[in-house]
Length: 65
Image (cartoon, rainbow, N blue to C red; front, top):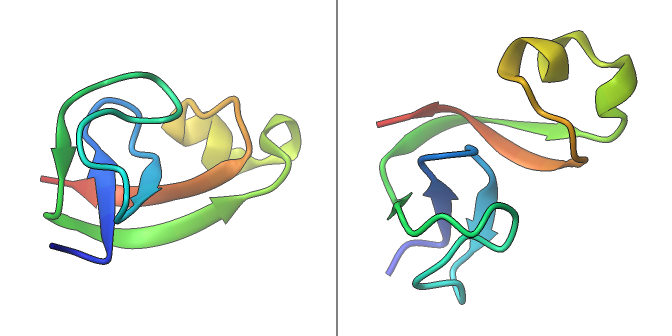
């Protein structure tokens, strides 16, 4: 099992204890195949969050395969 899984729908990084469903969006497409990592604290003031269409603070993968 990987250290972290990423939701293919919202790109939110999940802990390894999450096995079936994204805790942020409820999506079930979780993957170990991802690259890059960004922590967004204030999405309303972040250009990266705007580009990624992120509205909630959290940890996100930049590329999900």
